[in-house]
Image (cartoon, rainbow, N blue to C red; front, side):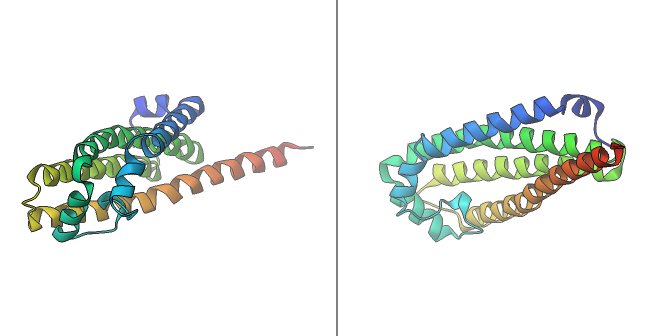
Length: 186
């Protein structure tokens, strides 16, 4: 069951606002901060958090490639905590808004709206592990790199479920609204 405070918060306006704030912050984070420089320093290869798994030698290679930009990578990871929280807020609000209008708020399927919180938890853990790896550089622990890689895979797996789920529930909500309007016509 969705907590009543969350159901009350997830109005259409709040969900739309959360979405706009998340997308705006993401645009700033990935477009105007050091992200493009970090990608360039990494030979335009995906950063660790953008790969579906990596090994300790790949962690070392990326951190070595960053050189003097390692401090900027730390700052980027810290800002990524905010990005994850905003993403969780937006996707949870959208899912609660849609699912509680498609089903009763007490329907078990409404619990799917809590999946973004799991994704954000994985993102927070991933960022923390990457910061730990950065702090131990150049002595990278293969075990710690393995755990970080596993958490990154978990984050992607949850994201690959949540994004289409959110889109599909919103489409279903629109279809339901259109069907209601069509059946009301004389």
